Length: 289
Image (cartoon, rainbow, N blue to C red; front, side, top):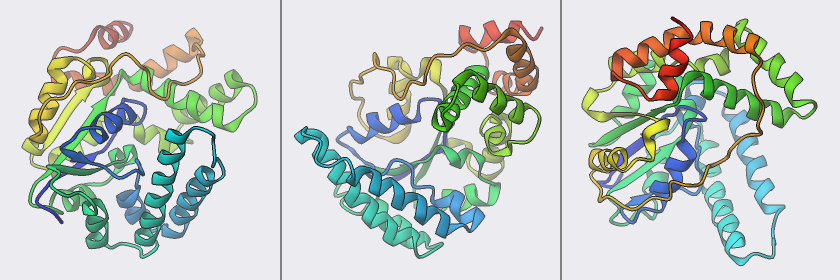
């Protein structure tokens, strides 16, 4: 491992992690792999390395199949991502190997001040995994982004529903029913800010953890705080573009009421942790009163 700070972007899904990845990847003092989501530590927990190798192999093939696109800049990006997948597949095919993982992140880092891995699934990791991550390098930092719980859940569901195909409203409604009914534990876990925060508190020195909310992530003071936390210079950011925006679909009033009741503990936990919250959060919280 280099002397660089090791950054873990642990989520939450659909809370600005892709924008964060792109912002930091473009920063001259940061080196991030061309593969955004490595899924190393969550695969270590499940032990399903063969499944992850197959998934990464599909992602590599999906990029190779697009070449050539006719756009030189896009072609260069796709080739860079393919090379990164090739190197990463060599690592993850070995199973759990923290040293190989660290070498992958450090490869080509040069004099970068920060290297890292931004994988939203890490928000669901157990205390033991988080503690192991915290001790993987002399200096480690964790970034956990949160978004209004209702907006985040519905965005996650819309994304999953669009990938399944079919009528978006019907598929999204079925997925929501499964989450609220306890049949989709994976998506439910990604909504559990309270659980993630509690595990972080138990496993990681609070000085190593940066928390922020999506609704104020793009403001200059939040970015200044983030850069200071990582020990890098402030850089201008493009804040006007939405990244990976999902298809528009409004919840019904009945869906909204059920989801808000289910999410009530998340609003309470984040308010207790962070104090006053953005208007989007408080507007929804008032519906719970």
